[in-house]
Image (tube, rainbow, N blue to C red; front, side):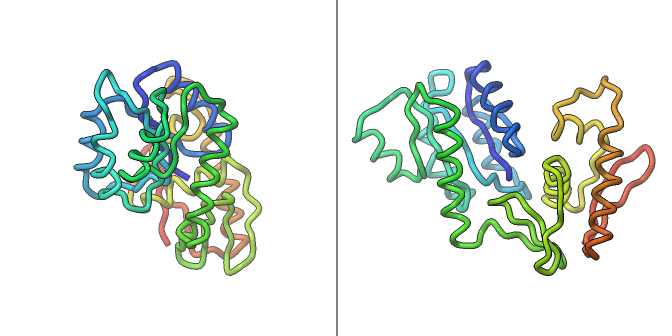
Length: 225
């Protein structure tokens, strides 16, 4: 499950990143209006499942880009964070395409609950079920199954599988995976990627999944379906 955080306050952005990553989400962060515009203009980009967007970014109103953002990513759920309150303001933003509105200050428990609510709406329309050959990813409850039989994956194995499947033709080197999934910098020696890949491969093979994790020494990892 991919969540994009758009927040210009670095301490809050880091807090949201770390807190939501602990819940099993794949998190990316940007902080400016220009970065939102660049995101909208990009082609062949994986659509975020949820965008958490601060209302004011370096003095600019991000709400002005909300209709364009929703037009570019129609199934993405957008949650606005704002210190600007008032029923009329909330109504205007919801009418502009926001799916929810969280007033500052807020608790991470409240925000997590709001995320689950907007994702639950997706779940009801089956948009959180993604099929790859005979393997199905359920993005709502973060599980995987082959022909109806659940695969017993750890949280990191599920995250790794999700990252690889979202861009099947992309080759990830170990350092990119360390940074994306474990938040471990490239200068730290660790064999956690290799161990997790080995365990995930075994589970996919045992379940007769058509998805295969391939690798090339000194290059990286990718999947074939």
